[in-house]
Image (cartoon, rainbow, N blue to C red; front, side):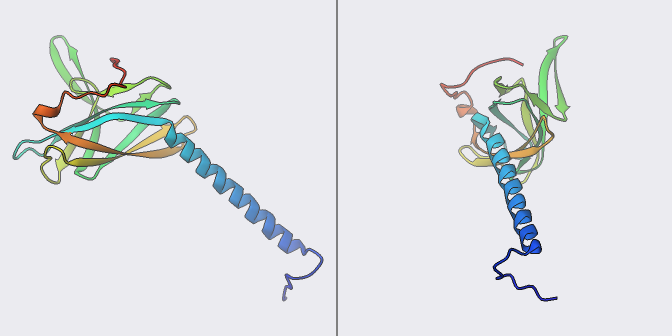
Length: 176
């Protein structure tokens, strides 16, 4: 069967194809808008990574993360490390305890300060030493209440011991 798609009368198959294409395009645009909107709701302040000493193959990353919506940080990847984990540290019975977290829930509008002696990222199996003023790229994966994952790219500066006390004037300081 040969279809002549230039007929003056609309052909039922052509109408079906056009509706399907319009529907598919609308879904794609809606999904793109939703993902873009979700990413814009995450703000990152003062991202930095601790410089390493010779022979050291681990480091730690810090930043303040604020989300406009309830989301969960579920995964972190970095270009300088084979493995990145979310960790928490807290004092229990006069002993500082660190534990790995599988995820970090973020409540809407509440800044989460990842800092030394608190929540932080641990970078394991570094590919090379981290020197002062280098840049580390992170890809943070979040999941919203609808179980939709989205990613946020972050560039963090490596800071040596002399530069680890700098803070942004716009940060909010909260303990978790």
